[in-house]
Length: 432
Length: 166
View 1 (cartoon, one colour):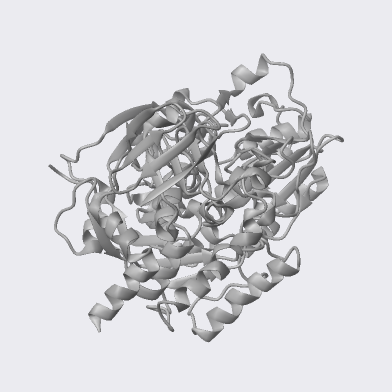
View 2: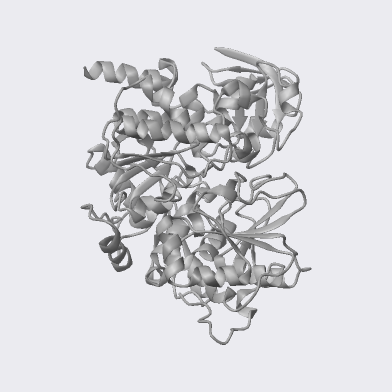
């Protein structure tokens, strides 16, 4: 019986020729990451085991959730990881003005690479699977142990293979595809499993689409999401990393729990309704409903805060204005992306349209700060979770959507179809 | 080891944002967090829960973020065990790592009702519903996880391993 891509990476990480689903292994780790919520909590636990981290090049602490610090306690937490990073002489030290959201800056600084075993004390650590790495979220005790020893136990997962075929239509991107998939299999549809994406449709997905999709594997309960390393990946790696890497491919006779074929030509702009990411509705279903009036739009996060996302949103917002009853938070996921939005003229488009442009932060996604919702408010958000109270009051409602749907909705004031926004004279609408 | 307590019951997909909302995550003090446990799904939980009480839930309990604050706040609130049809994987790891007993048992999760008095024997994996006179077989932990639990959690297990290396 052959191995899946994930199983092969885990076998290599554990120094084994072969692993099987359900097997408990201890694997060596290439990157160990925590943030300003999980990191400070890990430090006293780490100190029960070690004085020094296992490898100063491989431990990364990113202040991004409650930064710029929203209150005194948050400031103390950010300070704790800042002091620790310096005391341990960590190679990578990130700070506001030079960093951004963890899952954007790790790939963009070439810290994570294909074939690696990566853990992060943040559930969306599965994002790096887009690069062909095994990457998964863990908790605080796990991350403290990983920082001390450079190893962690894993149960080898079985996998679901998703065969993506065909080219998605102009206003459909990675977010619609992953919301469509989670809608199909449910929020525990891949519980304890890997989601392995393959197929001829991959060549139409940018790296940013793939980051979005791998990022939300956790929303289907998956241990990890993973993409093969192809020409698109290699082009990205040439720009962003100098790290040597190893490409793994699934065996031809790998066994999958299920094979699900997704015809990308048939995927429609898709929105996840409150209060689960699996509560998916197509834009066509929404258009026959009473219009859903909204109060806020968030464009950003580790899910959709990258260049492709802002280009798509800006193409729709260009020469238009945000509806008077709506406020829009644009949050570039890193300082690099922020600057690129500036040099490409996207910030001007957003500001002219009436959007607030904020400094990189996880901020509004988990109701931290910079866009918390009041009771009864409705928000279209390009983030990843629409749980009860996720972005603020328990009586607020979150609709997860693509940057295209979010931009169209910002203009209309209700959840709107980006295909129906008339092209403005000078815009390259739907540019990918 | 046996535990005995009264049941708080919840449905499917209880997420970590309702177990402990992000607005409280500027602290990682278990006692402080316990004051806000389950606040967004059951505002009276923290005032009603007694040491030894249990949570019984449906599928995918603890889905969402990796915050260890979630199992920690429930443990500090006095919860002695969580029985669910299934657990989300990060919550599952975190609970074992901090020594909060959890058990997968779909039948028990379906048949137990709020307020039932439950006894759980971790050695045999048996769940007894003392209010209804029913008995269930819980899923025992794999051997490796039993070793972790016996060592007193991942930190002690790792320390034993590190000493062995030296």
